[in-house]
Image (cartoon, rainbow, N blue to C red; front, side):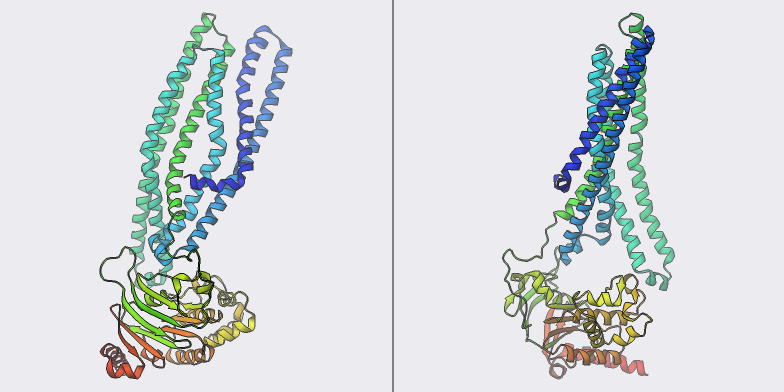
Length: 578
């Protein structure tokens, strides 16, 4: 938890001003009952009007000073807590940007969103409360106790009984409530997961008429959240009536014993009223401390979730002393590479992979679904790290290179096409923010995207919806290819990047790419044999191992796995024509 408080350090000046101003308000509040007692016992009882006026003016002045202190504390504590929350949220986002694919597999997207929003808000509000109430409540309770005992020590015995009883009651409630607060956040994660999946896959839901099923799934997750929240806040709800019961018994006891002492001439009426006011201040302050502690239990639950992200070990990062080298030639070598996903069981995803891609070559990777094709190319830019062996670029192990320099020279078109909100031009320039418009149009042309882009009324300034929802799958893929090409990469990876375009368009893209990337080492993953026939080398994967290596003609003559892939596609085409 202390690691989260450090985000308040840059704002320590205004954070320190909050309790100072709050102490001013507390002092004025503690001064008021004494002035009130003086008015009753000395002014009213003795008919001293000038004393009443003077004391009344003092009460007004004290109230004004207390208002300034309270208002000032609210302003500076709000500023400090919101700046704290901003810094914490920024730190979390920066940390997530450093995560490898393995880290992102560990933390679900919905959970990260909840932590960045709801959990940060809870922690931020707790800091706000701490800067205000954590100073006010203890000092008000301590000051009230001192002032009350200074008025009458015998009556203080009532407080010495009431305060411990109230403290024990609050401790029990807090201990019972804390486990539920953490569970509430986990249930909120589940609701966010279902919501995100439904919104992302809304077209599939409608196509399969699964709306009612999704409603039931969301209702189940939502009911779990509601039920857990109700259990948590039932316990919290018990606090207020219990506190009021103890407070009322305490006030009744003070008035009872105070009345007896007035009859005995041992205390005056004004002192009893002042003592009652101090008692209310003390008990309300103890109640505030209890609620603060309950808030801290929520803070603890949310803080632990945030600390998990901040303290997560990023398994892929630049070495402490990376080689000052950026890939230039594009020679890629897989040397006895094996890979297993973290915490996975069974045989490795990739096992003993060895081959070399020379600069400027086009390497095609084919194989059945699940053979490890996408995983293999993900090892080149270190989206994952090898479990055994090494991936070398220009003779250097990628683990010895600076990550930024490595990835800047690699263009990657992922299997799952992702576009961002903004214009088409902005999405293409996302690969190189310094590119000029002529480069944008040239790369779009190479990706066979220029024609359909210019057919839009606003051309390259056409705004894209979330994830490029207003484009077809093939159009999104072509924009993604242009985005990768505009980096002018030394190594280009195309992971099934033309699966959504027709054969004629694919042929045009391949012809343009051959002109555009003559000196670029290219890795192509494709399902269609027609997409890889012209590759300099084809790697055939089968259950995570290399089952064949060579050109299309060589493999077609000698490799059984490749032959089966080719013949299955030929049979499909024949069946389709029939």
